[in-house]
Length: 295
Image 1 (cartoon, rainbow, N blue to C red):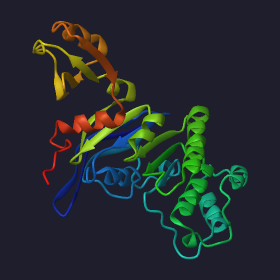
Image 2: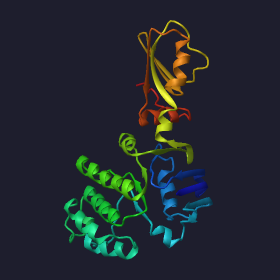
Image 3: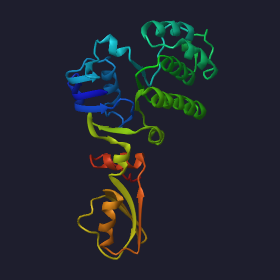
Image 4: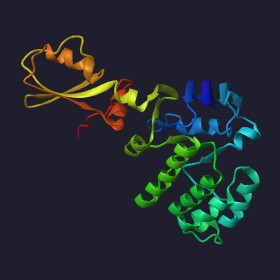
């Protein structure tokens, strides 16, 4: 289990992470989301032991990560911006990764050459952004990591390659119990692969739940009624087109339905929210909702 407790990290007096806690269960696919500047990339660099933290603790299976070679050999990180130094080719990097990661699987690397049809002799820095991202995944997956940490992983990849790579990662989760933490703004794709979600804002963890619990805590209601809404109904957002009210309400269908029945609706549809909608309306509670701009 990857665990963060009361983490604080500052840069020149600016508190990028503020008493943040997070738990990623073993074998989970954890989606880390938040607006720009929320501290997601800073958190990931702390998780990987790149940054020294100011307060709190970060552990993998209750053992620290910072300056712990054994734990770092169990983890692989693919950043948003891929950087390969000098004239290293994929063949050169294969030797480097094999030396650093004890679990590097050379046979798997060779098999994946049929998926990542890249020139293994050419310097990786000459590749396009998408090809560099493919090279990073090729090497990372070949390491058979226990923990895989991804920051905007599919940026620059075409749809077919995205699907193929995520399919391989999910196979590793199912077959080997690989733990995956993914930071991404592509909430639609996260919704397809994640079973846990953490929403960050302003360097803090706004909420952290399983995806099913998160989506079960808020519903969309389309309603037509002549009576006022019950006071017990926790309305997060409300809009109206003609006679139809659209409500975002806290609670699940089983708890919301009896309350709505009190206003004898002529129409009442209760719909689940997507992860993107949950993200928007949860952040609306901390003054980050979508604002109308007058032109």
